[in-house]
Image (cartoon, rainbow over all chains, first blue to last red; front, side):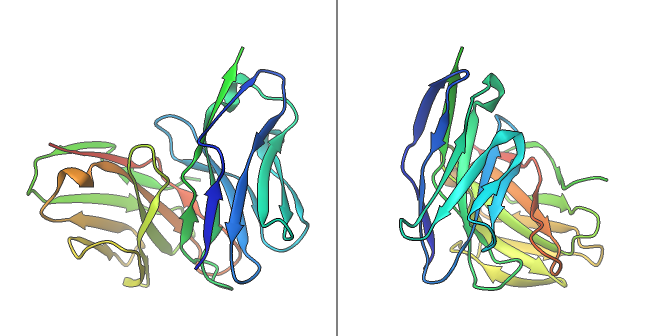
Length: 116
Length: 113
């Protein structure tokens, strides 16, 4: 079975400092991994996706993530936090080896707080 | 280009009642999935519809049922509501073919009292 574990339930950073949100995955084959962001009272927005191409994935709003098979990790980073980055972030793995529409399995989420 | 539309946005129901939530997928998408997000949790997969049939199902009781119409829109029905059914219900649409393309709606907030 596939799963993801978000290692921090809450991360607090100051505006302008780097962001690191940690995610480990478990999969018996090469996974498809995603990061989603959810602002209060809003739906989920895709930040970036890894689908076995380049291991360093660039997303929207300056976010990027690196797929590390040896560490089974897919951590999300951003060089400089903005106040607007404050939100809930979900690490997600897609079930199914080749299904385009396999169900998504979400981590528990990390709340990112950005202090002025 | 309209994204995924869900209705209603908020709903309050009493224990034991039944509820129907609606979802219109993004244009060009033919697959609809439903997720339940309890407060402080990540979304959990309920089921997925394609060609008007339930294609996949998560670990939810039979009280949760759905339907997909010929125009690809979908309904989620929950019978005999429990307090624990209070959650944000998210609909996601995607194309069956052509690469990754999940688009989520803003959800329906269901409160059971």
